[in-house]
Length: 263
Image (cartoon, rainbow, N blue to C red; front, side, top):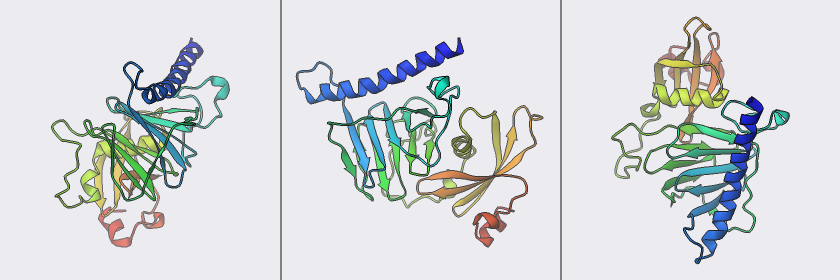
């Protein structure tokens, strides 16, 4: 039964990728009924290729950190459990990232090259490329992802009542302003994968572009709590270490900041 569910999920993903190609062709034909608007993009390095629609962003690349195998939320056949997942996508109205071992094909379609340092507004998404990665943020919900060669980080939705549109008149916010328990939990899930055991993140300390939090497993007696160290890189937080006996200074944290983090 489990195999059947995975096969159906894999077929659904194939249909999704096929649909992207079909609707792109339809968009090129003005006579096509109800064309779906989308934009193929690539970075200056050409390391990542993406397709943007109003409802989702899907990217393909050889990421240093990417899931391998068939998790509960990943679409692949059990015989392909050793295959790395090259394609990731995020939906404007759905939580989390989704992965697949397929490759996005944009042959025959014009790709917009995302120039570093410029801000692009495409299909209801704000796209901010840089030399260290590209941030995709949905203008309505605030959900998105930060994509780089090192990996992909999920960006959770904005709190209710907060707009996703940036305020150009305000000064850049300190990284610590975004170091919430929810954001740091998402960064931890990105490191371990969304099929990890349930846990909560508490006791967040932040200084400069570093943060530390206490991780509690659920149920509480499942495993002893541990400390997670985070670093703010580019536009998002990344979990860099987990345990109970490591030294923050040994992980590259400046001594004054390590003192602020009490590690």
